[in-house]
Length: 319
Image (cartoon, rainbow, N blue to C red; front, side, top):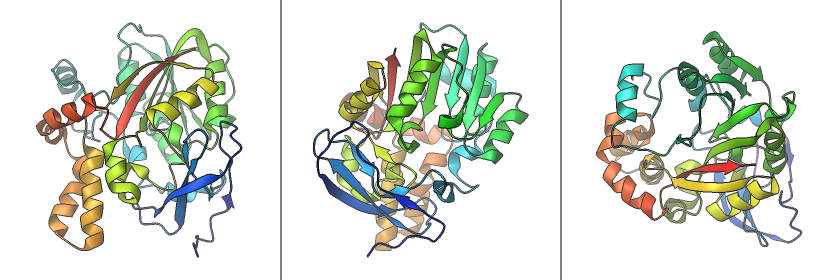
């Protein structure tokens, strides 16, 4: 029998695409990132194949799985692999290098306008875009992270995106880096994003890719599974279905050229088997290492990305 911490209230949620069919259980996992208690099944819709965590914590209680040490909330100015030591000048040089990570890739045709970041954390991306001439706003669930972003001088709504006041047709660009999988009702939220965007506005999202070889190999030990904070688990096809239901048309999909998930997933396997503790610790730290470590494995990541087999993807969509 699966047990849950007393702080958690559970709910069963149907497929957000409106499918009426039986689900099949794919795996059962737990919070490996913070080792918080509770086990959570991931089920697959037998009609559309969308994977979702079910049952799941409710909106009011899922904050238990977002402690103050939660990685994205620690980010401030500077980016890539949480390397805040990179100065703006060094980052500019990296951006002009032959390395294109695809992790926050934006359409080159965009000119500075109004930008909304959903799940802005402590404001690192907002700050960088503001320095490039954008008028930026953010939405952030964590009060501590939202306050950190405000201290950088940016307007941030603190609370769930669903509760954010609507400013219809306001934004040239809406972004969400690894956020869609956290939302309790992604279709409803995508429809709201559609209303917030200008008629020619862009939506750029990144999500983990359960259609990748990584997920096939590691299943419940996959680093990007991140249960139960990740409520939905997308493939390119199921992501397209959800976006279309929300009113968006996919323009391009970029498979990210990073191997953070792969390294940390191997660490999970080694740790569970009690083998090579030093190696497992080093691999688990890989996502947080400085940029040079990621440059060293870039050729392998690039090759896997050509076949859509890295564990993260960035998607451009338009209204």
